Length: 497
Image (cartoon, rainbow, N blue to C red):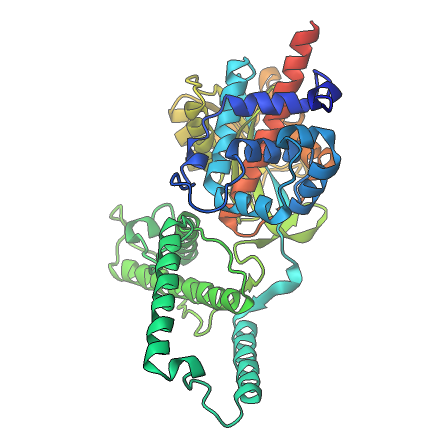
């Protein structure tokens, strides 16, 4: 008999922490996606596949081909798979099929960290980092460019059909359909295939229903100053709906072109609707609080043709600007981190700026902490100047959590015009106190090393999958494996005394 693989791996190796952690997790959502009637080829055990994915990500190995290669060459991977080697397509399909369940592993790991006493939420720091999408900036197209490419593709298809069919229409019945008996047999086979496809489509969780954009007219004017505020709120509602209805990115380029065209048309429709709502609001002559309007703003007519651009490879990604760095095509990955560098929230946004994300990320942290069994509410939340949002800050404070967000960036020596008095000066005074200054300085030692470790040590600076939902699932898996590494270090430290 060959020696046990376990004898080849040290007792304090990371792989044992991963295997032990997955054994404690609730993987019901993974198993529920498989047939229990024994039909079809036997699938790999989902528990083994989860262990494989989490260990690979913890080691910075995210390529499905790289994981397959490691299963053939690395003894720790062999230990997980029991000497088997799932091929890269199986690994990629598992990651795609269980996108939501993989995202939920973040909470499972957070609960294990809570059991180990690693989650203390006295102070949490929120920050974002730009992560490249699996797409190039060169694939951004305007509406004119998209329509032109669609027409070019249609012309190319016509030429190919002319070459293939000549003078024939191309829809003549094939030879096997020209007799009654052969037609019956072919139609019966076609019906069976259609029934199988229908059943598969019903099981596919990624199937979505198309629906028109619906604007909440009351929210359009809420906290909006002027026409620009109404248009901005309209775009925000569109982005929220797209986030709720996030779908997989199509493989076919012609389908992606059609989707990009639809997105730009949606944006124009929302702008027209929001502008019409603003004009109706101005036509009443008084504001919502009863005050009369001042000088009427300059007239504005929305464009006839959609403006802006969409990336054809990953339509959800955006051009991101980073301080002192070239722009990238990617996402803004948000995280909330404790003083022990445990990630308690991991979210994705397609907005380059951090403005407006303080409350959503904080609420996500509260949600994930509750699911992980942490009942304690954070005492202080710290973020940099990019998160300054008066309404969101006041709402968080009203619920019992203090907020430390400087109104001025580190690069500004003087306050911005109009950013004085009230909450602005109050926050400046708080940050100048010994405690306030110490808590804010702790932010840099808390969240920024997490991003540095992820991007440079683990070499994770680009998403492998495309689309907002896929990027979110991957970001939460990355955060889960970061926490798993912290749990491993804690267990080793405790074992060695």
